[in-house]
Image (cartoon, rainbow, N blue to C red; front, side):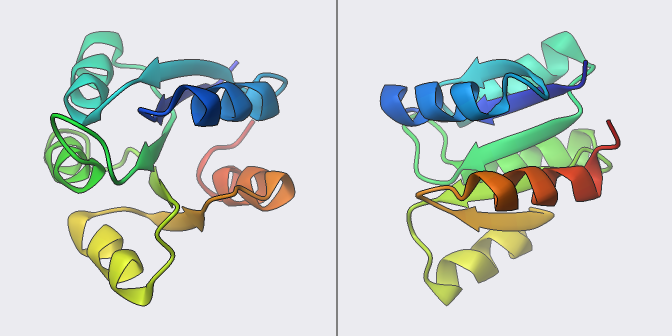
Amino acid sequence: MKKVLVAEDNDSNFILMGYLLKKHYEVIRAKNGREAVEKVEELGDIDIVLMDLKMPEMDGLEATRILKQKAPNLPIIALTANAFSSDREQAFEAGCDDFLSKPVNYELCLETMAKYVKN
């Protein structure tokens, strides 16, 4: 089963994402950007990352920049409640491959992930 790292500091948002994705992916959590970087380095076999942009310790933009330097082919999808065009631009500038806004549309999320991960 393919592995998705969900970088999300909010427990209820993570629980929802885990519930939505568990039929299709092994779901791994990081509670902030620093943890996301550590988990990708530690596990090495993450297939895709869903990255919240606003998190404590290290935000999703900084974590994306670091991950893209280390693993340029790792797909990273920004996942944020901030759906302003400036947020979208910042996400793409940091290296995100795609952008989804919260609340997450289940079908759109799976379709977007499928563009980057072949199950």
